[in-house]
Image (tube, rainbow, N blue to C red; front, side, top):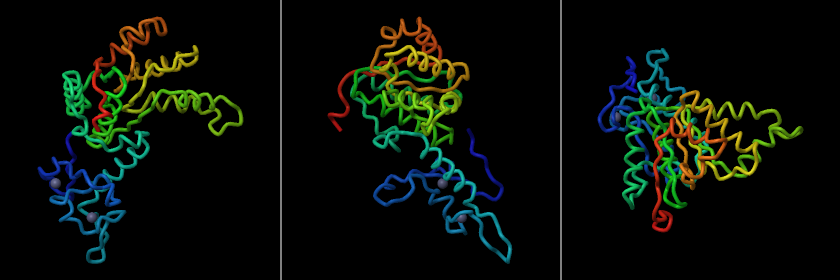
Length: 269
Ligand SMILES: [Zn+2]
Ligand SMILES: [Zn+2]
């Protein structure tokens, strides 16, 4: 998506890849934001001190600051990111954080890179499967992070676990805080631009759980929404009987299925 050039806004430079925004690698130590306005093309023109609402006074008039468009975009991205649900261990990890130890890893990383580069002109999401510890969650989180940073898309991460189903179940229990919210929650997962479904297929003890997962996959499929799945299971084998094969056939149509097996990344970190 090309950057909209605001008439009073700055002409962006190559340093920030013409986005006006740069990633602040040391944000953690410094207690700053992970994204900051470009020090070369935005900051020098700023006259508001980077303070909300990004206006300044001149000759008694309130004027829109040159940083305003960039700062508002940063604010929007940070808000989306804060609500994305990405696990704290994987937050703000960029593509370079994924280390390649195998041919499969190399392929998956390349696919992730291409996807981020071409988005939103991508016809399929990604289904990453393989043994635990090969960096599937990391890579899926990186894709989500990059898409939010580059495109300010609404993105969410969910982990399919006992907790996930229990939370959803609580929405059916009268008196629970979330009572009656199941359809709202499910709609949110169905509608969000980009969804990461981590650990897909680990819980399928009951028909209701199977149905819930199928409905989620189906809703993403129907809405032609970009989805990244991770799983410890080989979908071709483990999902062929799930919901009578419906789940696998949907997944095949909506994602590029990639194996990511091999050495445990966590041991070498
Ligand atoms: Zn710049
Ligand atoms: Zn300013």
